[in-house]
Structures are given as structure tokens and as C-alpha cells.
Length: 169
Image (cartoon, rainbow, N blue to C red):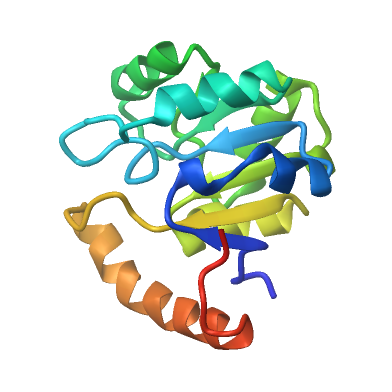
């Protein structure tokens, strides 16, 4: 189902090399807001180490953010030493296509990790990528996102029922 992720976990640090290898993933697209940073722009603790560990395993990275705040996205990308695409227009395919080209990897070798079903997961599923939904790292969020969360929470409950009532990871 286009609304369901392939994998659901607490945060990016729960995504290990084993899970990536078993799904032939060679590159990861990362959302920024509430996946890597909170509303105050604080980077998730351990994110840099997680990213560096996977880079050592030859996993490529690219940030794919819907934010139109280039400097914010650029700062996170610089900290993690990875390329970035801002104003990615997820769930439209445009940003996913740019990221695929940036990493020189086909969609079926890419995973998207994000905290929103209606942008990250639907967009990744439309491109036939491996999709990973993480919990938002903060309960504070932008107004429009807060409105969508109610719908997303219902979808997550259905997903959890279908997947033995427990989070994977």
C-alpha cells in the first residue's frame, strides 16, 4: 500500500547495515525536519556518528528536504558531509529524481528515511524505493504538519495492527 512504509522504527539510528544490505540499499535519502533536526535546529544526538558508520560501509547519502530554507538544509548537510536538495517537493518525483541522479543510483537501490507519510513515504513508494518511517524527534512542529499528524497517526495504527502490533527495529 502506498501509505505504508517498508520499515518503521524510532529514529535513523535504528537503521543498520544489515537491514540495508538485505534490501540491496546502496544509498539513503534523508529528510531534515523532525528526522535529523528538531524545530530549534538541534541535530539528533548520534546522527553524525550513524551517518559516518554507514559511509564506512559504502552507503551514499543525500538530504532531500521540502524546506525552502536553503541555509538551514545546507548547514545540516555540511555537518554530515553529504549533498543536499532543498525544496524537494515531496511527494512529487522531481526531488527524488534529482537525488537519484546526485548519488548515481537507481531508485531500487535507494531508501528514503523520513517522519511523514504524506511526503516521504508516499513519494518514496511512488518511485519504488525502500521506505523507512521514523517517529518525529520532537512533538513541536509546524502548524501544517501538526494538522496532517492526526491522519498519519490513524494510518500508523493500521500499519501496526497489520504488522503484529509492534514497531520493527
